[in-house]
Length: 303
Image (tube, rainbow, N blue to C red; front, side, top):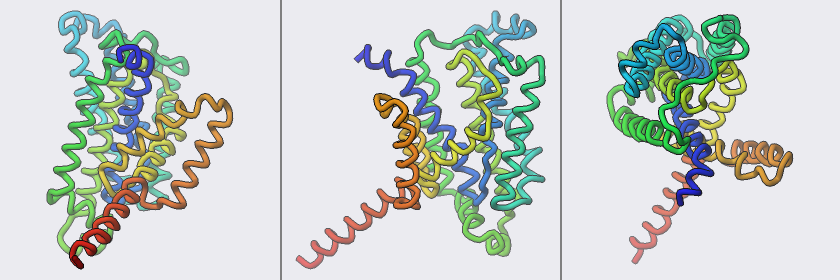
């Protein structure tokens, strides 16, 4: 068992990490926003942790606080990401649909170009030698795992709260929600900020996990990958990002024995899932469950 965890620990932690990043897109989608800004906040959070962990200015803090500097990095990344999300979200969320998607893609690219040209971020080379919290890659499950459980509980609670109902009302019909007294701007910004804070914290956790950080962490390709996680998993259920993120993160490794053919099969799986499971894996499971309940429930009632 120990050998299995040591050999596959990096992949297992990566699957949990990608599920969390998928959830950072789930919250804006929950309120009807096609936002692709999560990779930008993810990269920002990673840079915050990498800078605090490597720059000489913070050396006295690192020496004094020891391992407890890492939770402070996560907190700093979450706060900075949240503040930036408010500044970006208030004007950007006036847009809808594809226009919002383009605006958030532009935000990700602006952040990437800025990081490529700043000395503090290491430019195009990035930052190497980020201090690690654990010696073993598998041990990082003790940071990403509890965060995933916390976010699932948070999603469960928010889904059944007044805020969650407001998110869904805005997603279904923003004009009708506004007419019912729901402030769309307020709730859309709130959903955007929740996703940004989560992405920033995951980025701050990921920098020590990867031991290096650079501008390639926040790109347009990453935006499309995270969106695929949510759409394939299911954007109408909190389990969708979990299923999509873990399965699609593991798929390339599972298909690795096929060498170059694995990329073709990976694409075929995505196309097949998009056509035959329009509501994602979680939606398909829900339909099967409802069909089973109706079929066997009616059979029992006839008896």
